[in-house]
Image (cartoon, each protein chain N blue to C red):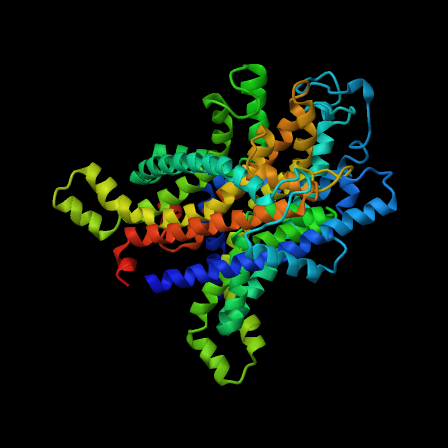
Length: 304
Length: 305
C-alpha cells in the first residue's frame, strides 16, 4: 500500500511538471527546439559525415528553398558551394560547446568565489566583491576584445574570456544566498558539531544555492552565445576554418548583396535559440517561485 | 545618504584603478607596435630608435611609473597613429557615443514603461502575451545581425536610408533603432514584473477604494513604486549599451568611442586604448552614481536614512 501510494505520488509529480509545460505552450515549444539543437550538436556532425567540407563549385551561392538538388542544399550553399545545412550543423556543435563550457566554468568559478565571499565576509569577502565591481564597470565586449587580441583567439582563451566576463552575476547571487543560509539553524548545528569551514561551505551551503544558479545559467547561456557571436563578428572570436554561427554571419556580410542567406540563417538560429532559452528561463522562474506557481498549475488541477 | 555616496565614490575610484592597472599591463603584452608602424624592411637601427623614442624598451614597471607621472600632469600619452594627444582624440569621440546612447536609452525607457505597464495591467491577457513574445525576441536578437539585415532591407533593397556615416536624421534611424532593441526587450520584462507587484499591493487597493481614477492609480501610485527596480536595471544597461555602441559604431562607421577603441586595439595604439578605457570607465561609473542619487530621490525610505 505504502509503495503504491509513493509510486502514485511520483507519477503525480511528473504529471504536474508535464501539465505545467502543457499550460505554457511557448515553453513546451522552446524545450523541444532546444533538445533538438542539443541533439544536432552532439550527433549532427557525425550524421552528415564529410559533406560540410565538400565543395561543389557548380552550386556556388546556390539560392535557398529549391528542390532541384539534394535536400542538404535546401538552405542554399555558400560562396565555395558548401551546403548551408551542413555548415550550420557543424557551427551548432562549436557554438554550443563554447557557450556551454563558458557557462559551466563561469558558474563554478563565480559560484565558489561568491560562496567564499558570503561565508567569510570581512576583508576577503569585500575584495572578491570589488573584483565583481571591476568586471561589471566596464563593457564586457571591449574587455574581451582587448584580452583576445593579446593572447591569440583560440578556443580555450575564448571560453575563459567569456566565462570571466559573466562571472559577477554568479558571484553576487551566490553571496546573497549564502548570507541568508549562513544564519539558519542547521549551519549553527554543523558548526557546533565541529565541521570544518570547507565542509560547511561545500557540503551544507553549496547544494542549496545550486537551483538558483542553474536558473541564472539558463538565461546566461543566451548571453554568452550572443557575446561569442559578437566577438566572432568583430574578428577576435573563433578563427576559420572552424565555424560558429557568429562567424558565419560575419563571413556572410561580404556577400550580403548577392547572397543574403549566408548571413541570414545563422543569425536567425542564434535568435531562435536565445529566444527559447529566454522563454524556458521565464517558465523556470515561475515554477520555482511558490507565489506564482498557481498560474501554471491551476488549469491542470481542474480534472482532479 | 552622504556617507553612502562617498563610500560609493571611493569604491568606484578603486574599481577604475584596478581596471586600469590590469589593462596597462595586458596592453603591453600585445607585442611590439614597431611591427605595425614601421615598414617591413625597416633596418634594425630604425626599429631600435623607434622603441627607444617611445619608451617601449624600458622594463614594464618603469613604463608604468612614467605613465603615472604623466597622468598627474593630466597627460594621457600620445597617439602613435594620429600623432596627437590621446586625450583629445578620446574627448572628440565621447560625445558621439554619449548622444547615441542617450537617445537610445530614452526611447528604450519610455517605450518599456508604456508597454510594460499596459502588459502588467492584465497579466496573461492578449496584450501581455504578445508583448512577452515580442520583448523576449528583442532581447534575444544579435544586434550585428539585425544591423546588417536592416542595411540589406532599408538601404540596399529599398534605398530609403544611408548605409553608413553621420549626418542628419536619416543617418540616425538605423543605429538608434538597433541600439534600442535589446535594452527595450529587457526593460519591458522588468517594468512588467515590478508593475504587477505594485498593482497588487495594498496602497493601490486603498487608492482604488477611495475612488482615484484608474489612470492616476496606474501612473501616479503604481508606476512611481514600480519604477525603482527599473532604474537599477537601467543602470546596469549603461555598460550593455556601450557594448551595443561598439557593434553599431563599427558597422555604421560612427566615429564614437567604441569604434575608436576597436581601431586602436587593432593598431596597438596603447595611449589611445588606455585613455579611452579610463574615460569610459569614469563615464559609466558616474552614470551609476547619478542613478543611485535618482533612486534616493524617488524612494523616501532611502532618502531619509
